[in-house]
Image 1: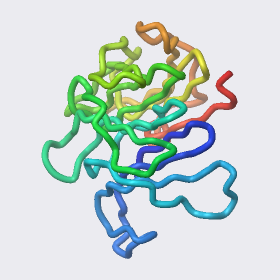
Image 2: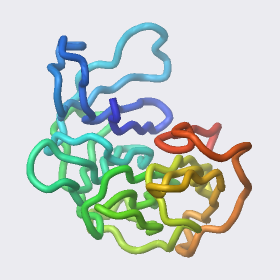
Image 3: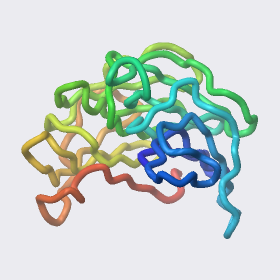
Image 4: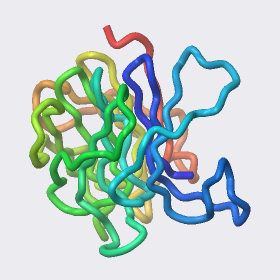
Length: 219
């Protein structure tokens, strides 16, 4: 559970996570995972196949960031070491291998929520030991550290995220005391603060966070 997931339209990849069942599932023992699994959208009933490994076994890491050639794993809670990692890893959709180090977030965080266009990967930072409203981004073809993009409207973690070719959407989230139902929007190619797009139909309850989304053709 709580694995990273992204796609390039042809392949989808699931990275890391935590296997909670005491009985091995798909050959994975209970605990933090490094495994990368890949599937194609043409598949109907076959299961994802092993496709490499992350460098760091993590869960609650950020997904949703990908371009045509690779997917990214952002932050998360590692099996050993600090409570939150700042590591950004990338993995090829076409070649099975161990992920490579791309760069670092501004600080270690869990529950980051990502989205992307063809050039930039953008994520809400998540939980760093405290809640925040920070948004950061990377240029996916240029390895390096993330830089500041702007801010969400509210301080929170575990927001949902999706995008089309030009705009990104963040919604919901939890501050530790407040459930949010607002929907924020950004223009992916233009750093700046998120603005109000709309609202979810109701407020309150755990369904308001740790929820992700998808979109149709990005064009």
